[in-house]
Length: 87
Image 1 (cartoon, one colour):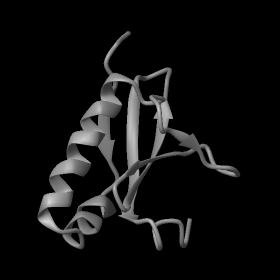
Image 2: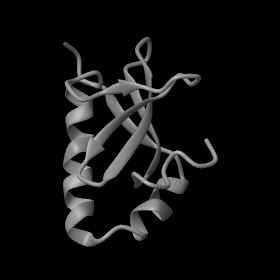
Image 3: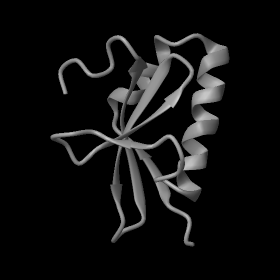
């Protein structure tokens, strides 16, 4: 299986600033794993969107997959209580 390229929406950098440093390291490792298999165990498709989410502790990583171009585009990161607001 080919490896996917990871891209980030500009607002993801702002999302990362609001997360404690030790959790940021785990989140970034989880994002790296998405390059290997973006639909791995724990991946759930969001209803009403062409987006997926994966859990990392109390945080959620929302992303889109472009299979034809082998791209995983991370669109939002956040605490599970507020990450889905405004989608």
